[in-house]
Image (cartoon, rainbow, N blue to C red):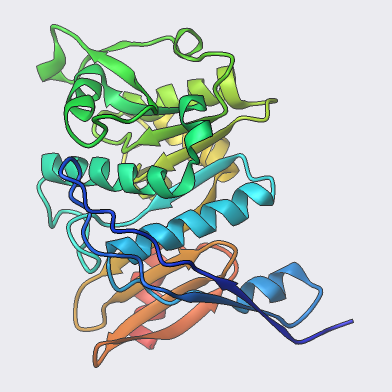
Length: 302
């Protein structure tokens, strides 16, 4: 039986997130998320879930937090969050790699402040790619935080040639840990392999959750790494990545027929185009389209 109802989830105005350590600006605007349940079918309900493209990073972080809450409530165990950090309209490569990682670190702090209640902070472990980044995080974005900070790999004497020392994930995890957040594991090809190990040794068949934050998983999905040279990494596209629910996602396409691929769980995947300062929806679908499909088929025909 179908129905037609409107559920409004009020968003309380929050205090400013301005902090000398991580510099997030502004105040989350009083807003509403509208869910129109048009059918008892879940796919139809998700299609009617309406989230507007964010106007700034404060709004983005709030939307990502709400999407995460919905996914966790639905029992999702592996979550992906992906969006550009240089600006909301930037594309991969617009920013310098080190700066993008620093911006991601700041945004992760803001995301965690919204998502994780104080009593859960000591049960949340954030994995950065390398040990030296943990030291930097403690002196900057995460100064004063009770969140647990950890790392996936340690630099080796041959770091300049792409080699790192592997860290056994089972030794890093503690029994009280409930949530793992992995920060931008894409600079070194071994990092995602370590994330898979973390899942196998500490998340699978448990109630723990794992979130990958700006991991650029599209590189693996798209075959960016040749399978002949990176067989283990290429295998992740078939064995590991399909287990993830992409709960919040922004990917921009430049050019005369450019646009944006956007998703906020549990809503559909939307292809947007900015027209006169407003984002217009060109296309919707339930499953994630490939970036190639969006760039070559959906955007040119819209």
